[in-house]
Length: 196
Image 1 (cartoon, rainbow, N blue to C red):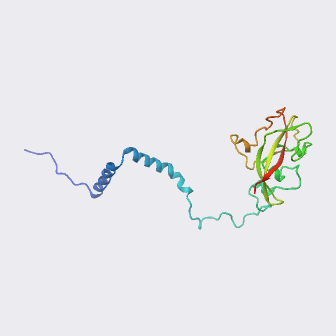
Image 2: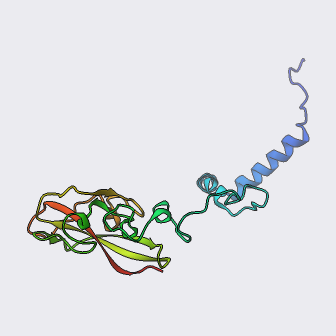
Image 3: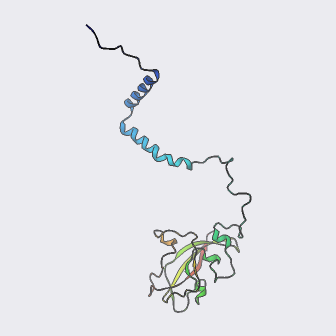
């Protein structure tokens, strides 16, 4: 009688070791547990670049040839160029987060509404750096409402501006809520406290 069976060939050593390791793992862990660990590894992998790393040999944080700002201690581009003498200009230090017409050019002042308008009871806020005393202040921007916009000087400064779902720091909203008229005229910038 003739047998068609061939003699069994022993698997290479590496195959045997991998098979034993996988069988041991299968005996101790469930499929769901392994899949959960793999999933956790995939989710955590993008965070690896955020871990602290030695950067002694990398580029320095500030090049030696960097241009010095005009206002030492300023933390934003607006603050670096802000001035303290003319409140009718958009680069006046309190206007770091203002969006709209300046009341100081419409018959009012930095923190007062022009005659015939009413201040809104609500406001948005910003934190502005005063280059004169080198301190930061919380500034409340309040719209003056009740007359058509005066359109003398209109500014759009966005230091700290937040999206509409963070309304307390969003300067794109017309803040005439709670006044007798929702017609926008201009915006004021009143200091409400120190931020430093």
